Length: 435
Image (cartoon, rainbow, N blue to C red):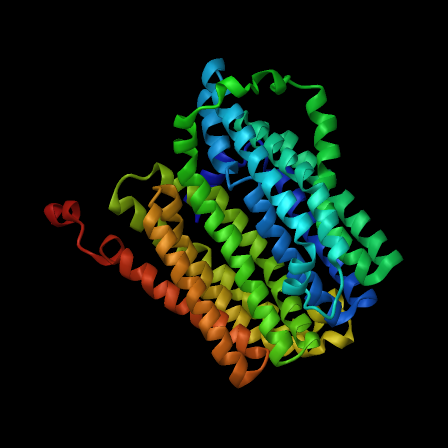
């Protein structure tokens, strides 16, 4: 545990720890407040519709930037002192994003009715919300482009401060719209909140380096298209497929069980997202950079089991506390209407526990760019999640979706352990020789 704390203190959080903690806390508080307002003014049925729209928006946003964020950050950081290569990186990412965003905007705008029927069902007419999303999507893409550039130049404090302001602004806009227009306001807030953040980002970049001079059509590079493609495909696969599966499962609950029950499932997902935020933050700060540095099986094994011994017990205790306080948590976040959510906690918590166990190891796919391993295991988990969701929902109602979540990650964890069995449990040659 001491080594983990020392590593984080010395290598990751020395510049940004306090600000990042504030950012995470504010994000959670903002989520609590918006969830409470949705529960009061919209109810469980509205929450289900908001969940479907949020998943669709997430997928469309990911496609609009082609999942290039991490790749752009990497190559800007690598080329920030080489103006020619820097121009190629930024120009290539900009024009790829411009083309993708333009295509998505046109497709979404002119197919708003079809999309409405898919995510809201034909008896709900919110096509105008879809059209608003198509109009504001370019601002989201520009915001992410600016963020990736600043991240590449290691403007960590700048990014976190603007993220804090963005979270506050987004929460204010969301709460105001829900208060004024109930379900319509909640849906509109989903599609415009992240795009409005560009206004804040714009204020910051106006006083900084003029990156626009680096964007030239002549600097578009097919070699950088190839370099960015692996980052893009890996990011897009999860960012697009997983939300679409969530929409499909939620829609299945609506059709087979009921709209209100789908809202209960969405409420459980929101609670899960809040407590997992802390775990994912730690994984990003520690596990990913450590795995990127480690070149030996012995080192990989040591880090995995070290994390299991130090962090997992704390996480397990936290989940147990959450389970026993589940009624209190639901009352704080939502309303008495959402009391049935308490029946979903057990399977969701068990599934999240196994999910974290597996993701700790699976981060090696990203750290070592194990492209096909990542794609195949993600595809496996998506297929299993859908099939088990249908089966268990048919047999157990809305609780079946949470049971499917647990079963999926037990099977996913099994596959991950099989892939890394020799690295985690095999005989290490160096140790054998020492003996």
